[in-house]
Image (tube, rainbow, N blue to C red; front, top):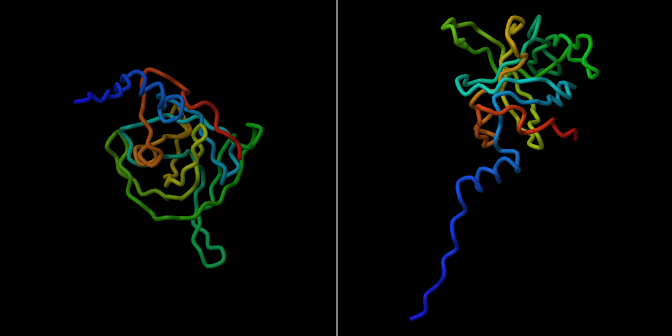
Length: 166
């Protein structure tokens, strides 16, 4: 009888290192790109407690263009060079009741847009909220993390690097 040699299973550390190298492990904060909104770079807090991603937006209002519903809103300080306001338009998904971490519920516009995390581009739903008193203008929620098949290393920051421009 011949004995077949089995390949040794890679160690857990080796597996994690491979996931980090491939950009599938995020730190507790990351750089995100929003190419549909002409925002090349924005800081986001990676929040496993938040189901839906959220973006700091001012004056959101529903508009109709070519028979489709959109939300027009202002992103303060996110023009391409990092200075000045930009007005954005994104497809409206729905109005949804969102419960914040303090337990209060509010109805928010949910829009559909692409995000870029490292070299991964994903289509996600984002709620629009006034986050002016929050530390980060964007939260990356569980649904987006699941879509990108990301793991989170909470003791690290910016593991994915800056978003690749396409």
